[in-house]
Length: 193
Ligand code: MN
Image (cartoon, rainbow, N blue to C red; front, side, top):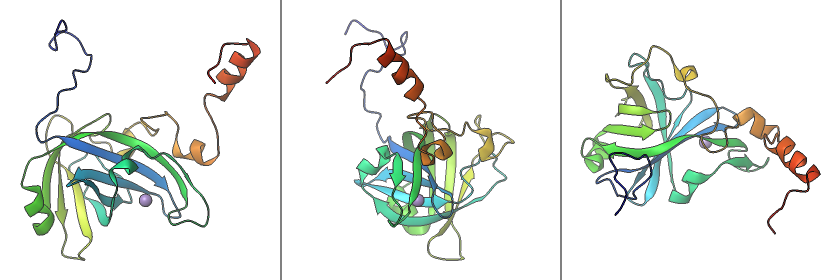
């Protein structure tokens, strides 16, 4: 009660009406792609976007609808071992909240979703429309607003928003904190159990 939301960036734990989680995971599977997941109806509605989201409204990115995933999956970053489905490294490339701007139930049925993203990388209004090519084929398109850019997916920082690691570093087993941990051991710094 002593803090004022207008003057401090601290979180206040308010639920934003109609806002839900989204996550985009970069998945270095046999075919590299971005898994774009929107929390809806207790699951993560999912699409695989081979080229990744682009902030350029002229880029219409193929987004293939995939299986719904459990909400817990939004925090997954790691390596899916060889021999398993989707084997390869996964980073949390972006995440945040999304806000539906149309009737999502109807939109999933009819093939048109309009929504706003509040992620670290992805911002502003986006649309996703079903094509006539196949029942699972959609297009992901940036809408005109203050968050457009001429750049493609490459214009976004490449690393994980959780760890800063690139998917290549994760796949190679590199741990960016290892040198710091080694130095702290040398200094005999206190450790937790
Ligand atoms: Mn995937």
